[in-house]
View 1 (cartoon, rainbow, N blue to C red):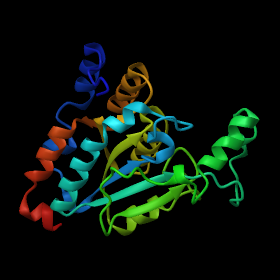
View 2 (view 1 turned 90 degrees about the horizontal axis):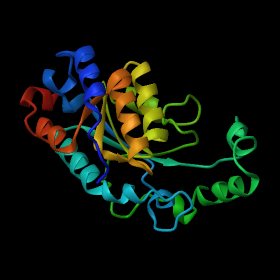
View 3 (view 1 turned 120 degrees about the vertical axis):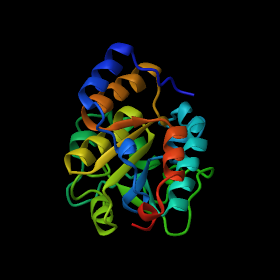
View 4 (view 1 turned 135 degrees about the vertical axis):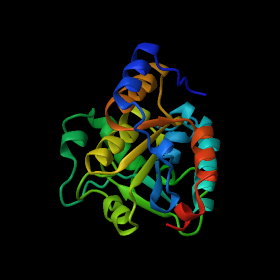
Length: 235
């Protein structure tokens, strides 16, 4: 499992900044909470995949535990699929034409095209009836005009967003940053996000804890959801 022990210097700074201001300490309301599972697709999970993140396979158990606990408590679960759509109204030319090597751009567009095998969600994920599965064409699930997530969250009267998935320092971090700045309370799960190296993961945890999200591990979060008050469960 990916390291989650950020340096004490940063942990102390985060603690001083946040004080007692904690979503979990105030009591999480499952009825206004959504779990957003970011891009746990074959193209990131499958051994040998174009953008394989080996550690992402290790977090699936934690992701499923959180999803099961939140559904049982009356919350919502959403799954994003990173999607290459070169024909969208405002194509991502800054990425596909000017950032990536042309051969890599072609391969990535093919791998993550709708209907491609690696575009699909990883089979080991628990996806339940009523969960929201959606496509997005940018790193963030909340980039305007490239994802339906914001509209869905608002329609469900969601106030708190829990972020899990891959890559910690890319699509997950981008989504968490945007969610906080759109006014959502954000919980970033330390042991249910994954990227390529410990260094990248730990740097993201520092950024999240200091500026954008409350950090929590799976055990703490599942316990909080299980002990949510009946009134909170009913919304």
